[in-house]
Amino acid sequence: MVEKRATIILIEGANLNLINLRPKIYQSKFSNEEIFKKIESLFNLVYFQSNYEGEIVEAIHLIEINRIKEFQNRENENCLNESFIDFFKNIESSEKLSNFYNKIKNENIIGVIINPAAFTHYSIALSDALEILNTPKVEVHLTNIYKREEFRHKSVTVKNVDSIISGAGNFGYYLAAEYLYHLTF
Ligand code: DQA
Image (cartoon, rainbow, N blue to C red; front, side, top):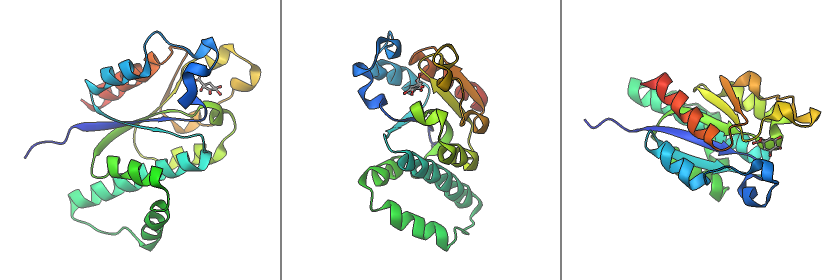
């Protein structure tokens, strides 16, 4: 049997889709495409970006539910209950989340890298969603949030991840991927 290639998920929060329009402090030496290519030398990479807090919360739910399903498939169990079935019905109404689910479905997901962007500083909902997620998790910030305005010093999400990389530009995504590789292999 051919082993499935390990997959990692990179989630970016609000305004990171327009990175090139943002202040210089956010610009990195390499383009995201270049960094993603480097990550793909280690893992299969699935990318998800949203400007909506709730959409990211639901993407995280999908990762966890998929993880439970994969585990149950392996153990020949099936105890996904009714509430999960309703949850999938909800997801079907969002094209973006359905597409995301199709990409992660049946994958061997070994970790999540998340840059929650501004949600970092206030989203208890996102923090609680990360708490549910049982994979290794790394929070990444392009900038060094501790060197910036005071309101950026606090991360409400960091308590529910394993580690944080802040201030290495988008190279931080690659560093996080290397860390996940080191954890897994
Ligand atoms: C950021 C830092 C946040 O304070 C900010 O709101 C962002 C990006 C970073 O990557 O440095 O949008 O997470």
